[in-house]
Structures are given as C-alpha cells and as structure tokens.
Length: 131
Image (tube, rainbow, N blue to C red; front, side, top):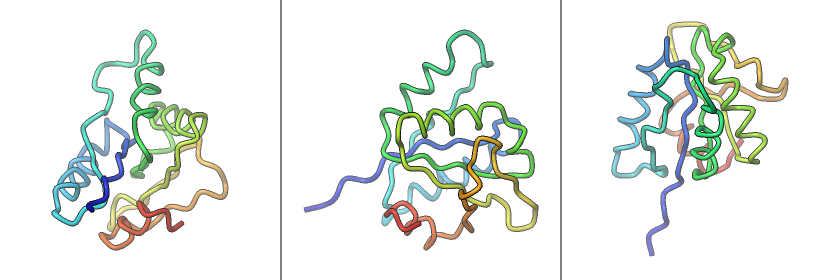
C-alpha cells in the first residue's frame, strides 16, 4: 500500500528567493519524492486579512519548509508564516537556500531552530521527521 505524500507549505522571501521555491517545486516532481507541494504562496500585496488566508493554507498541510536566503531575516511575510505555523502546531524546518551565499534565519525563528543543508537526502530525512 502506497503512503500518502506529506503536504508542505513553503515559506520564502518572495522578493529575493522565488528561485529557491521554484527549485523545490522541481524536486517535488521527482518520482521518489516524499512530499507534495503546490504553489500556495501569497502573491498579492499584504493587504486586508492576508494572515487569515495564510493560516487557512497552513492548516491544510502537514509540514512547513522555510527556505532561508540572504534577506530572510527582513522578510515580514516569512516571519508571519513561521509564527502561524507554530500557532497551528505544524512541524517546520529551515533550509539553507544557497550553497554560495550566506543565509539568515527569520526573526520569528527560535534560537534552537537549526538551518539544515539543502540536499536531496537531507530533505527526504527532514520530511520524515528526522531533526
């Protein structure tokens, strides 16, 4: 019996790191991928009750992946999404987005939150809960 893929929400700095999200979406298409990813990112400006829309999306997933880049610490949306994930008790982890650049944690991350190296093996292990 095949297991159902883990549904993930990806938090990323839309202004600087959309390419990271695109790379992750590409990995999600691998035949042996342990997760299911859809483009749930918020594309409209942060107006109205956008946090309620994000909360609904996060409630519908199993885990949250935070893609970290150089400016993640200044990304208001990423910080809000991470806070909502914690409020909704969704497991999450941080991925180091670039092999050739420094990456920062969102300010909403805890001191205990580790940024994991982004490799295919690490990603599959993290999705499986090994952190």
